[in-house]
Every structure is written in C-alpha cells, then in structure tokens.
Length: 236
Image (cartoon, rainbow, N blue to C red; front, side):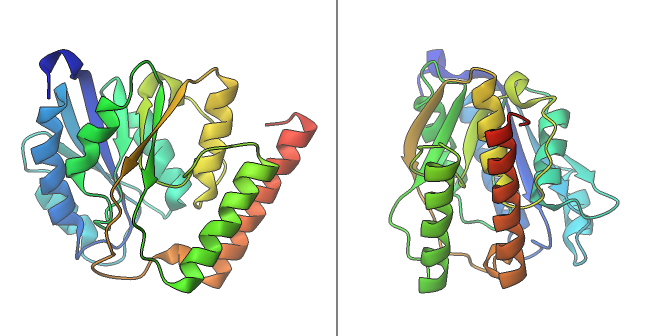
C-alpha cells in the first residue's frame, strides 16, 4: 500500500466469545496485516466472559507484540463487546474483526483503501454460501434495516472501519447483532460520512453462529423493533 494512504493509527478489535478453535489464527493474521495499513497499530482482544479455553488463549496471545486483551467479568453480548472496543481503542481508527475467522484480515487494506473521506467504511459480503435458514434471516434483517430504519446500505452486519472519535461515547443498548443498526443510526445522527466496499466472507471453520438460534433471532427482532420505536418517537 502507498504509504501516503496509511492510517495514522489503527486498533484491530476482535470480539470473542468461545472462539478457542479459531482465535489464534485470527489474531496472528491481524498482527500480520495491521502494520501494512497504519503507522501505529494494536490488536485488542475483547473476551466476552467465554466459558471455553478462549480466556487463557487470549492471555497467551497478549504476549505477542502489539496485542492486548480485555476480559469481561460477565457476558455482555456483541453490543457490550463493541462498546468496550470503542471505549478502549488507543488509535484514531478502529476495525472490528470477528473471532470466528469468517473475515480474512488480508481484506483490512480493502477497507482502508476504500475510505476516501468517509468516517465509516462498510464491508459488503460477496459470494456468500450460507445455508437456506441463514439466507432467509439475512433477507428479513435487510428488509427491516432498509425499510423500517432507513439504513439503505448493502450490508449492515459485516466488518466496518470506523473513525474512533465518532463511535466513542455512544450509549449502546443492543446486545446482539442489532447493535450494528444502532451504531449506524447514532453515527448518522452525528453527521457520519459512509462508504461501502466489497470484501470476502469465508465459511465458518468451527462452532456454530449464535445468531442462527431461534431465541437469538427473536431477541434481535425485538431489539430492531425497539430501535424503530425510538426512531419514530425521536428518542434515539
């Protein structure tokens, strides 16, 4: 990458809940990718009170140069992990990379190069090969976010690059994947400028996404409906 296009500083935050099988590979890939896009960088693991070997693994990985870890004493959900990352980031830009390995760290430069003057760059997943249930859920979620919440982006719930000062101090109420819509709505109200770029989406190599469980789907729907009510009543 042209050094003139480098970010002044980047925090690569990795929210992780029970990602023992994939976390090490994700962290090492981020450590390799970050110096190529930022003058200063760090990798921040946010362990959301995992119940497997993730906490011990995260502590071991924190011994790598540029890596640190924050442990939640109790599970706060994806929204709580995002809040911790936003408040704890030491660099002026932050990207949240999932700990499940479905986003290749080698695509971080794609987000950076697509920034231009934008405050937030949304990664758009291409060549998705999800099972039918996941595709139906994705389409339903897209309908809600576009038609009810007015977030007319191609992909709301994937990896994004943020200007840290824009997301720091947000009061995040959502615990599940509704948090992405909440953050975009609140940063939009702060005058954020957006860009979208196409990025990769890899099959999950281990475990099962919690977002596919029916109780999680229903709770996420409740969060989105709550966002819509607040948007309509001016309480967002």
